[in-house]
Length: 180
Image (cartoon, rainbow, N blue to C red; front, side, top):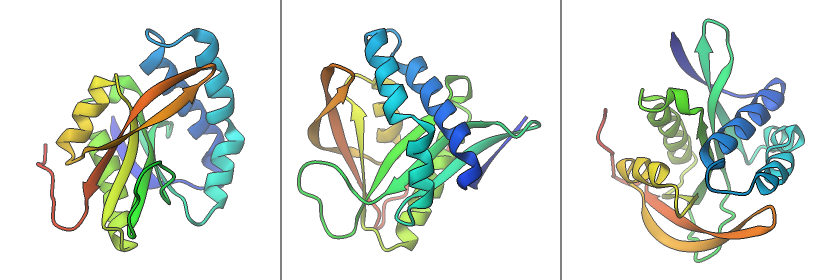
């Protein structure tokens, strides 16, 4: 099996929604109420959400595509920052980096991150921000390996519940994370 990172286009909206929903369920089925997961996925991971992002020139999305078969197994979204707190000129946001659990640990997440960092730098970004659930230790550890550090906290609603997300930041002017 080979996984390729490629830019996504309008035809990918349904696959992105499916991967987003599946990954969210995999990540939080043991810690969030089922009704809240279903509500969140129906709204935040709807095909229309991804179609709108793909149509917006301020957003860029890359997919991790598996061969043979061509199915998307992960993706990353780069956007203007939409996080609370002090954003700085030159900030961009890693809106999502999702990867089906079966594909963790093989370098695909780092490859998606690499595509995002390269694009952000090429657009003149000086810092990359992201939000991550404060109890998602696996993701937080991954982001730390990629050079991110805590820059704040935000409230994040999933269904009827409000949770604390960490806001993480990584400078893009000089840091290079270790390679795998």
